Length: 189
Image: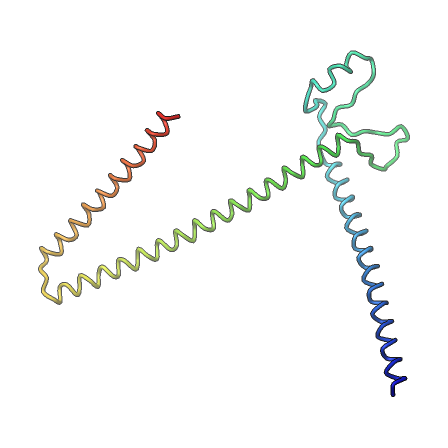
């Protein structure tokens, strides 16, 4: 029995070693596939980009323009003399690519942030609508209870008038507050 148990442990040990080897090989294959996909996407993006004859900085090659050498725009693809199908990248291409990736990430983050703001605004608007309905129903119940208790219609109208006056006082206060803030910002800059 101990011999069989030892053999079983050895088999388990071998299986674990093989499993770790297979996982390492799988990771290598995955990384190679991701790199190939990245290079394919990169070459496709660079291939679709419209090239202009005007560089980003027209004064970048001002010193070299006096010489009769041919200069390439930073937007034009660099071709090798062998006319091979492989893509070659220079430092300008890498900088443009990095800038394009940063710009794309910025736009994606901004897009997600705007979507979040819109979703929050819609949720707040929905909540305000529900609160308005709840307050209307509560007001109707209070009027019904007041009528049941014998409160006169004049008293109810007086309370409603006071509520309208309070609302206008609040609106006037908000306007005065924003006017004051604008004046402070405008004159203290």
